[in-house]
Length: 204
Image (cartoon, rainbow, N blue to C red; front, side):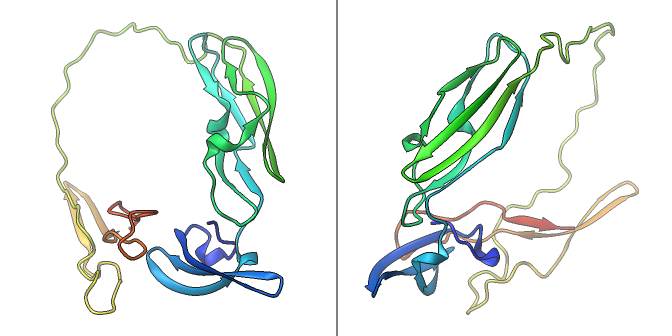
């Protein structure tokens, strides 16, 4: 599901139950693995296809662009995200072998969207001449690695990010960072819509 509220717009929504009250439907929703409670169906984006509005391709006789790669997400009449393969496209692919412009329409139920794919004309774009001899460079490795969940995660009721900064130094260069990385979250023991363990962000 995809939320309308700005605070939860990019959250991972899961519904474990649905009830009808009058003409409205209510879903018991989990957001990022935590219970959020009952929400009216109107809280979700319904009959929506989000696409990249314009795509510009380098002229390349060996490349074919799959039209559905322009889709960010699509939802049905209940607000549930659907597989992009179920969305119909007026054109399945774009050949990048000649300068052209393609307006592609996507439809799913009552939802529709449009994108424009442009193939640029210069077949020699970004080509250069290697007129300098090869030079062997110095080997290098990362001076710092950090990969784990926040030290505060799961302690009591706290799901806070790390409070201690990490200081990275290299010569006169100094960088202080806070890393965020939640442990695996999901609805109950379900594997559906599992979140983590992937970095969620970094504050510098």
